[in-house]
Length: 250
Image (cartoon, rainbow, N blue to C red; front, top):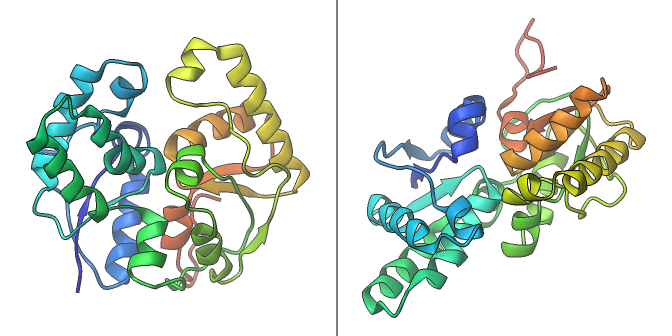
């Protein structure tokens, strides 16, 4: 049995707590013992990506301290997982002790789908979600962590689910963190393009492993009164067939 320390991203904590709850249900169903270290805070990605490295380093140090003893750290966000695994090393500032501590933790940090498939060797988690679903390749998840097939492997094993490939699945949705604030017109245009691809695929839902992407894509779809909805991969995998129960977030 693997003891998992769950890291909850800011977006999930503040805007979509059901994602974290779903991740816990799936991990426990997979046989893991899930712990939630309450001392955790932001991983530091917003500060890091906007050039505030001193502030990012302080948050990174807290992250490493909180999760230092964890057997595995699992995060339902590709961008946060990528920050902890790859970006922390860039904050060394010539500090050998920091390099050692950050490097020791990095191999034990996993994005949610990556952990299930690569670490647990599991693709069928007993999920039931009878809908047509398109998958969006989030930038950090794909380009920083190299996670592409794992979410699709999990989705193909979900009972009742029809996985469809939309056009340009690997193109940015336009959120990009601070990018959306600095260049809102470009961000909105990319969001509309992604939403159009979801609609052309005739998907009922679009999913990915990054909550920030889902916030952006889901917002565009909602404003356009589109048929499709945005849903996190963990929420799909947490859904089960229950007599008389409605599918998760229909």
